Amino acid sequence: MTQVVLKQFKFTVFLILVNFSLSMKTQAETPPFVLNNTHKVQMKSEWTGHEHELVIYLPDSYENSPEKHYPVLYFTDAYWDMPLLHSIYGQLTYDNVLPELIMVGFSYPGEDVNYGDLRSRDLSPTRVSAANIKSGQGPEFLTFIEKTVIPYMQSEYRVDAKDRALAGSSMGGLFVLYAMYEKPNLFKRYIAISPAAGWDNRYLFDRDDRYAATHKTLQVRLFLSYGTDEYEPFREPIIALQKKLATRNYDEFALLNFAIEGERHSGVKSEGYSRGLRWIFQNIAPHGPSGLEREIQSGAE
Image (cartoon, rainbow, N blue to C red; front, side, top):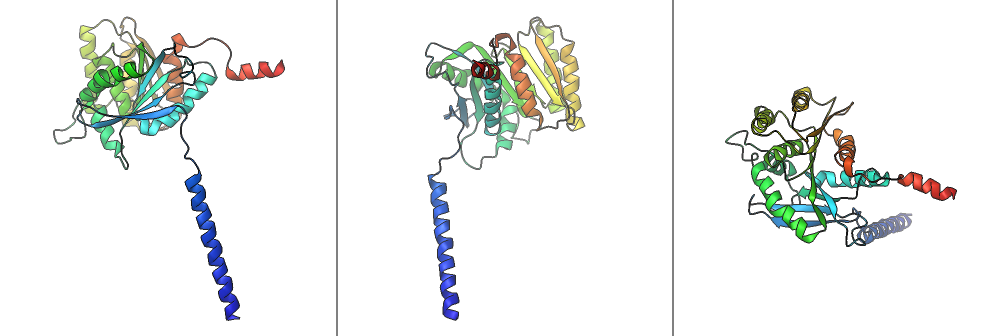
């Protein structure tokens, strides 16, 4: 009896080992899930002194349309948001409400990267404390984008050098608005989703006042949004900034203030990017039926 039990035990262990081995082999042979048409470019910046990574998306037509040049969407936090934007972009182009774009997301190379610290360092325009070394390098990061990233994209890819957009959420939204005031001609379209408008004693309010004191024109399209269920001390400065900008009479300034109903701070991204992309590119949106309409009409023929 004992011998029979022992044989059964050995056979069970054998099956477990075989199944484990087959499982590991299947995992090793299964290709990882990747986002179509995306690749990474790593570069060290002489302006920031740090390593950066670009996550670049090229539209489906890029390879077979050698004469075509594309508007470019630059955006922050690609390590989190490239999958989201990749999906939203596919939906909007299928619906034929968004032109084909090249998308360039800002990221950082390496494993186990502390994205929170790095984004706080690079996306903030001011240092909130002399002891806080993880803030205030926004000016250097913007220079890196202007002097290194944009020239690189123009030399290596078929981009429309006259049509660039900049987008970001939270700290990324703060950086977007800082860039709009600091380099108003560098980009012509902006998406700021739930920007950190209370940063450094409402720095953006003072920056807008200083800009208005010396400029009558702000030739950009700006989508500025927040979530109605966001933490109130974070939400209220955004609402106040929306109201402030709505009273400005900048020439050639197109503004859409938007409230995303029922969303908190992270949930605003999906609707914010979907609506923001449609609106900032509205004046160059394609004409014609949506993908669904074309499929239904094709099936009816």
